[in-house]
Image (cartoon, rainbow, N blue to C red; front, top):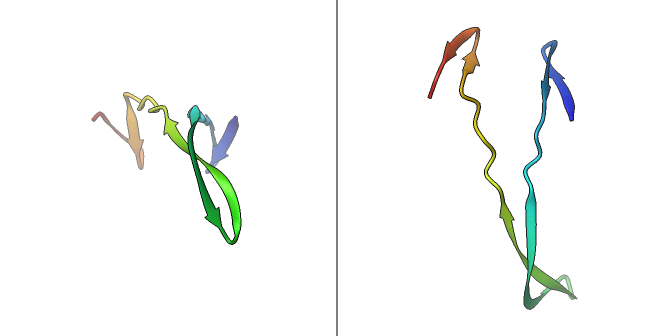
Length: 58
């Protein structure tokens, strides 16, 4: 997804989310629903970072 902030364009990455059914049911506001366990893949961090025009590394 292409986004822009303060006139600079960048590519937004969306992490993959896996949902695994747990076999449990819960009730919310009187309605039952199946519970799931969610795992989110870690996003790679950029090697070079910039803050207010100053470049630094982790």
